[in-house]
Image 1: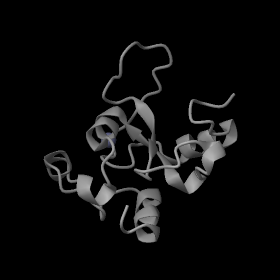
Image 2: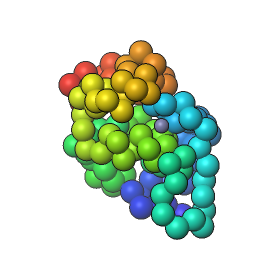
Image 3: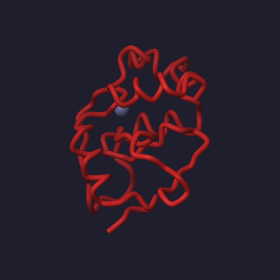
Image 4: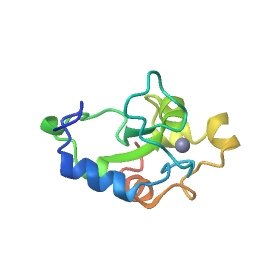
Length: 114
Ligand SMILES: [Zn+2]
C-alpha cells in the first residue's frame, strides 16, 4: 500500500532501512503506528525539495526523500535547506551541510540553491 505521498511501498521501505536515525540530527526514531499526535522522535517522511514535486505521480524521486524526526521536520517546515541551516534550531543541534547524512549531502550537491 502506498503512503499519503503515493510513494511505492518498496521505495519507502528502502528509505526507512537506509535512514535509521534522523538524517539531520541523527536521533533514533520510532514508528508509532497507532499513536495520536506527533512525538518528537517520530520517523517522518521528509521532502528535500522545498517546492515540490511532493507526490510520486507528479515526479517525486527516491533521491528527493529522506526520513527525519518530527522535531526536524516541523522545524524546517517549508524552508530551503540552506536557509534552515541558519536557524537557531540547527545551530543549537549542530545541523549543517557537513553534519547531515549522505542522502542530504548528495541532494545539496545536486541542488545547491534548494
Ligand atoms: Zn531530527
